[in-house]
Length: 150
Image (tube, rainbow, N blue to C red; front, side):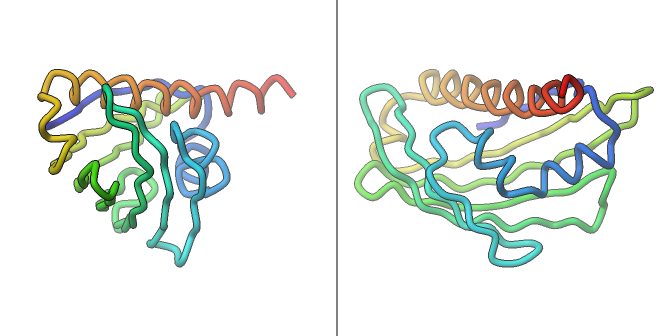
């Protein structure tokens, strides 16, 4: 499954890039995130509770970042296991383009799933993934709006 979208964020590119690398901000923005631990500059460990249709599971996983294109672009890849619910693995390419006082964030993500999750059907999985990514980016963009208002 693939997801592609873009979001305009009301902050300079350097601030957006820094926020995308801040575990505290990410933890607040990731739907269902219970724990996000930064092991190094390029490695994170996450625990997330998600409900996809009738299946609710706690996923534990690892994410690796490739910051070689920073601050204009970076990639991430990861995998997680939800026990009997199944597994997910994938990655995303993110670009940050300066746009006046703001930043256009574009992403292209790929996800493969297995186990009970894969049996739910691609439409349900796709719509849930779109909802979760929309929640993340809405919350992420709001962190800059509250900083500006404060």
